[in-house]
Image (cartoon, rainbow, N blue to C red; front, side, top):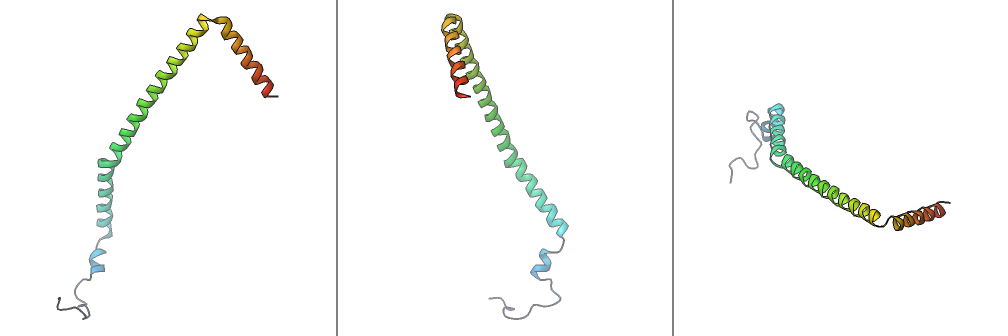
Length: 99
């Protein structure tokens, strides 16, 4: 058990609050360095990983859309009258619904 427990602190000794508040600029600089280190170690790699996954998903979506466009184009070339009839039917339907 400490000897000074229950006794008033010596006014000549720096208290805990004074030790903590000695130099706020140093504390801010230390905290800033910690934040920068966290950014380098965790946030930047996480953002880069997410960007890489998003880019890969965009490439896959583009490839899928191109494949579907090619499929539709091939169907139109193989059956032009059917494609024309479908387009006319869709146009008629949209015209009726939009009135």
